[in-house]
Image 1 (cartoon, each protein chain N blue to C red):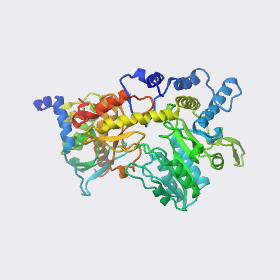
Image 2 (cartoon, rainbow over the protein chains, first blue to last red):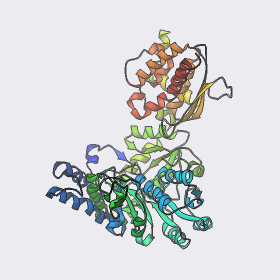
Image 3 (cartoon, chains in turn yellow, orange):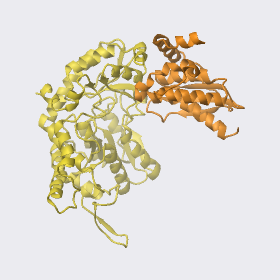
Image 4 (cartoon, chains in turn green, blue):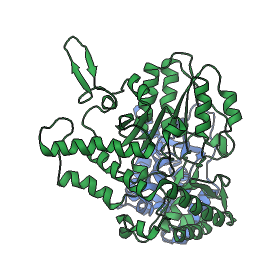
Amino acid sequence: MIDVQAIRRDFPMFAAHPELVYFDNGATTLKPQCVIDAVTGFYTGHTSNVHRGDYAIAAMNDRLYDGARDSFARLLNCLPEEIAFTHNATASLNQIAWGLSHDFLKRGDVILTTEAEHASNLLPWFRLSHDYGIEIRYIPVDEQANIRLDAFKEAMRPEVKAVAVAMVTNVLGSVQPIKEMAEIAHANGALMIADGAQAVPHMKVDVRDLDLDFLAFSAHKMCGPDGVGILYGKKDLMEQMSPIFLGGDMNARFQKSLTYELKHTPLKFESGTPNIEGVIGAAKACDYIMNIGLDEIHEYERKLRAVFLEKMSKLDNIVIYNPDNEYGPIDFNAKDVFSQDAAGYLASRNIAVRSGNHCAKILHEVIGTDSTIRASLYFYNTEEEVEMCVRACADISLENAIGIFF
Amino acid sequence: MSDYLQMLEDPEVLRELIMDHYKYPHHHSLTEDMKYRKVHMSSASCIDDITVQSDIEDGVIKDIRFDGTACTISTASTSIMSDLLRGKTVSEAKAIIDQYMNMVDGKDYDPALLEEAVAMKNVWRQANRIKCATIGWNAMKQMIEESENGHE
């Protein structure tokens, strides 16, 4: 059972902005004091580089940095060496896409994805299509962006070599049947790649149980610092995959004859000085949410969303695009008010939401509107905040939206 | 004229102005006429996607048109701009654009030159909306510069 008031005391942003209703958790999350302390502690108490110092502070940072893999391995139920740190989920997905093209795919191979994906899980694949003749096909989704397994099976032809989809879509919060999809993909000899950016922070993701080949997500959406992405890959696949960046720390040796040898995985994916303090903070965030419990977080958010949805559904001036999705953000518009104008009005009532197309620029063909408002929750949000948001939504009108400028 | 300017200080009047220009934008259709210059402003932000056209001949702005999907501030500011700069010489238009850019940056400006465009005077308080208030104006500025560098 989540004690939300106790949890809120861990987050200094709430004390700094007692009036703020932060419903933009799909964009980024607030940080608890323990994460902030872990990051600043590196600057004030133990600054050094990693993997290259022969002194005690450097050794301490090696332990903290590489030890962060243990936290994420516990979170995902994988081996620590199956976790590589990148700069964000986008960097992880780019590594996977480029790595696949380099080591796994050939011209004419097909990758399946959906029209509901975030740009990060589309553009890297678009480029493979342009540069290497790899074909991109879209798995049909319903009007709330859910993949139906019969449609997926239908799309799973022999030429399909990889499937790349979001576990939870970033706009509509559609939870895809990833485990069943992975089984179908593997039976067909295709790799299963999941974008976990909107899933891992909110629910238990067991990569062994789901049998994922690759998974990408970012620390900042799970109470961690910016600038840290996580790349999970099955060990044998990580060993076969080449890193997109070459340089310092990731090489074992090189000669003037142009030969070089890379370190073993995951170190070969971490070239140059990494975001050391970010990774240390990310491990703290990982421990923090595991301590609360991913199942508890999931259940709390599901209930809070149900209350939110019920109240929003009663408002005559609001159209909701994902009423049947049980999970994730609520995606809506106020009738006759452009999403950014409505979000501006909500901001004037101290409610932070996102407006626009949320980096999912081809999704409008699925839901039939160009831009929406996304209110996304996390485990520190409360029913009182939901009430405040709903009251403000009831007042959204063109007059009020323009009124904020006067 | 001074009565008119005084009226434009009334927040209710300005709010109505934005509302009217949003609901019934002026010069809100594009033309196929090849003599028009055209700028498609879609990269300034994730949301707004508007196209502005202009007919600039002999240093005079003969016509301005626009179309697209945009918020109240983008639509109204572009509509007002299309009224204000029509019929102006390029040098007059540049002076007005400069004053407008000052205003939306929260700097000093000459309200007499801006007329109805003063409706946008408070946009700078919402920093993320400055790009909405300038999207059409920047498109026009770009076309004026092109006309000066091109076949003038």
